[in-house]
Length: 362
Ligand code: SF4
Image 1 (tube, protein in one colour):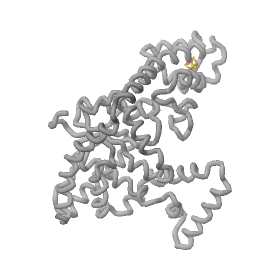
Image 2: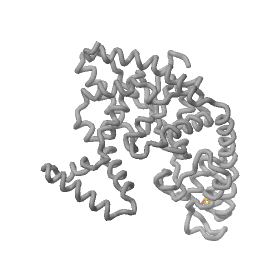
Image 3: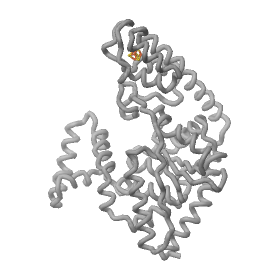
């Protein structure tokens, strides 16, 4: 890593096996960024707790698995700083200080908080609608007892914990500790980055010192990666293909992919838009346009189309599996993380000292 490159910071939550949606959406960009910028990539284990404290038993193992996945994809700890968030306590320390200057109203306005709260609520009571109605009744009564409106009802949910409401503060600390010049995001994540910039400005203004630098967005392009059923690929929908999917299972999953329901016979003229197999050809087949034309003209059938996709994907996924197995046998993940944490801490501790001084603590 060279010291004169702009700094980029990004993290990913260790919530289980990574899938192709994670790869095409975020991680592929990391591989590119590590060659151009001074990158700090972290496994966001504290963030995993903000919405999953009741199922935290796998976080440590998921962290290890994630590091192996990232390295098998090509992330190189010699080119970037790869670390575990909770190893660098300055992330928590700066979160605490920033919490002193962040108005609660800013956090309550965060639309992701309310949306995710509803999703979590539904997921918790999936298949137990009676229980859900009862829980909703209790929270409504509580809200009414406090003279609050329906909007506030959600805040009485037992999932609306301080860590979850305050995750944007932790996110801001993650970024600001390293003087990030850029944060790689999709356009839909811009409001989060704006919040980080607002927090940095308010901190500097309140303490009368220019300590925290406002990061800028680095818009990354991410192709659309549908799940097997055509919805967004997500573990909660059960429609994923994992990075190291086994050959047999990969084959079974591709065979299950949603296709044009109007194309029944080989010579039926198909509609590749909306077909999941076609979306994956675009990612794995350099000749995808020819495949699309054949589909439209009724010159190929879905069986042949899937067969070719299975072969193309297995080449990539099989290569990943082999690299992953080799790394699992040879890499000391804890050492990789300890080295990364030491390098991250060297930078974060200086920023933390400056922030504490500005706040009048030192
Ligand atoms: S031929 Fe291929 S692209 Fe066309 S609908 Fe069938 S699977 Fe999809």
